[in-house]
Image (tube, rainbow, N blue to C red):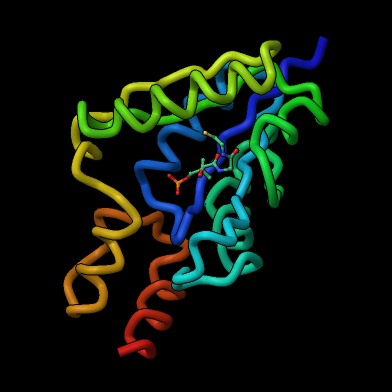
Length: 163
Ligand code: PNS
């Protein structure tokens, strides 16, 4: 059986925190689909869907069992459609927990045959988020410790242009 997991998120942009979770998930499952959400309720993305997918491809190229895809609609429907057995999420702090717990329960109700698996973030990534990266970059701060090297210049170029 091909044990597929889905790692969903906005990835606007992908950070070292995301990459850590994706890498660890790739060791636990036969195939991991990094799934970029097209969320119509969230329109203020800094990067287009294609840019976000391309950045994830660029930083996961060394991992053989990673695929990148996007979806619009319910995560549970996507998971069911491809026959994934797990949704993998990273947990940073207690503040993530309430929202993630709610989503995990809702997804389980919508599709009972997949489990949400929470991986505890590395201690050094506890404060890290795409928003923190964007905020630091927009004020000209150093983001080299927060995002993978391959996409550092792309992120800098974009966020400086936006100013
Ligand atoms: O990186 P994010 O923004 O925290 O990712 C959130 C995401 C995409 C995982 C979440 O919003 C999601 O699963 N959206 C799809 C819509 C859905 O299925 N909602 C019901 C779950 S409660």
